[in-house]
Length: 82
Image (cartoon, rainbow, N blue to C red; front, top):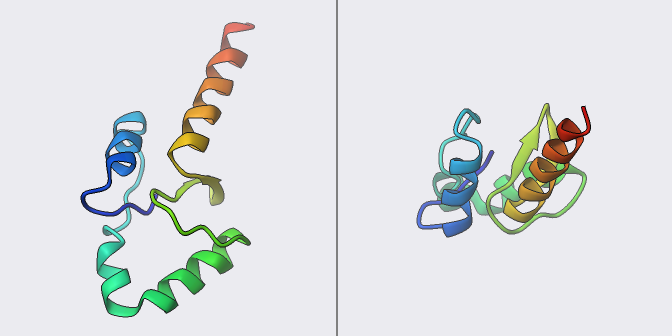
């Protein structure tokens, strides 16, 4: 997941996914070459996400905080069926 410092949603998603892999906070990339970083994200996701966090699952772009919560809720609902 890509996160930023001082981002409430980034903090929340880190709590939701404590075992998730964090990439160096994106602030570093944004300060060095914002356009290159965003072009990389666009190429990886096939979309143009501009908010943080940017969460990936098994290499596929999942979305941000709300998308992550929705995905975890769907997994929990599915698990309850069994």
